[in-house]
Length: 155
Image (cartoon, rainbow, N blue to C red; front, top):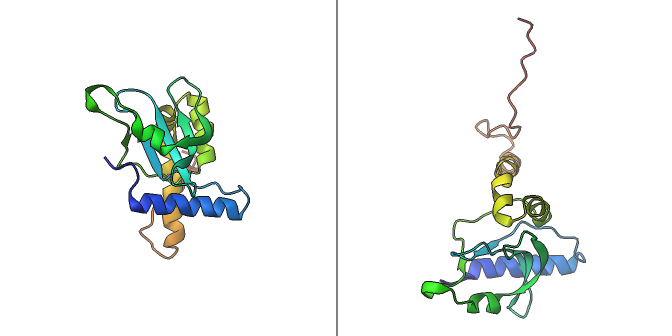
């Protein structure tokens, strides 16, 4: 399996350029999720350095301490697992939540996978807000406030 598609590579490089341009104050959502299909190791990446190998993101090796930092794509791709398996890209992964929030939730949960479960409502809220911003006059846009209206009637 190809770990980086051309589109993901372009997005990761664009994030790296934006981070350099604004001196590291950029906090994009992860564009790439890699995982061990036989274990708990998971990586979320937001940036790819100009060397084409160094990724920046959130790394979780399955010991309960996810960390922000740099990791090598070639080293991850070179990992050989039992049954001829290797590290895989989650082809269904997408996120609109910034990496800093992923990191906070992953630290609280003890893993990226735990954070993913906790972040589902946050993701839905962020997506609804983004959709509402893209379609301000659209009456069919869902209400980004997930709470039902309060009943103020006295009965």
